[in-house]
Length: 175
Image 1 (cartoon, rainbow, N blue to C red):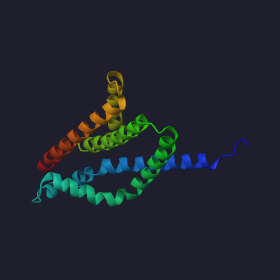
Image 2 (cartoon, rainbow, N blue to C red):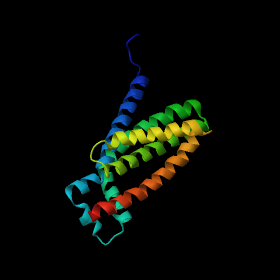
Image 3 (tube, helix red, strand yellow):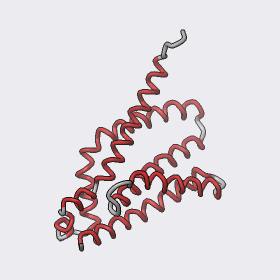
Image 4 (tube, rainbow, N blue to C red):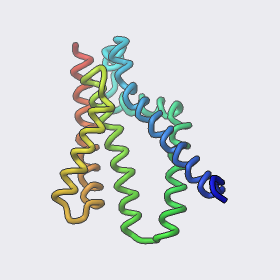
């Protein structure tokens, strides 16, 4: 009947909404992850602890995971919906590669948001979206297998952003 939404369509839209809400919440958390420490002036105190910067950042991330449990569950529901629908329907390896590329891209995006939030007060999310968009455009123009190329490039950029975030933490603590 026209205008009647099937249960499957409702489930897919609910999973999409849950995933989008989770992505939005994780983006906000990534932006505030370390920026709040800098804004409140507690970052130099954290860096004075007799621990390496990596250990301090890792402990802060693990402590923040409690706040991120709900959005991670929502993203998990969305990912599960994507996997159960598309991998069952197509069952191809390329679909799985695109899924992995999407997850690597999301992790890279969250790292860009965190990195930019340590440099600028406002606009870190928009700048991160633009940066990931440029990465995707460059790969789209130059690569033969876009999914694999994005997995490799996204992973390398994410590791480099770890180092950049740790270096920036040291500079912010020294001010």
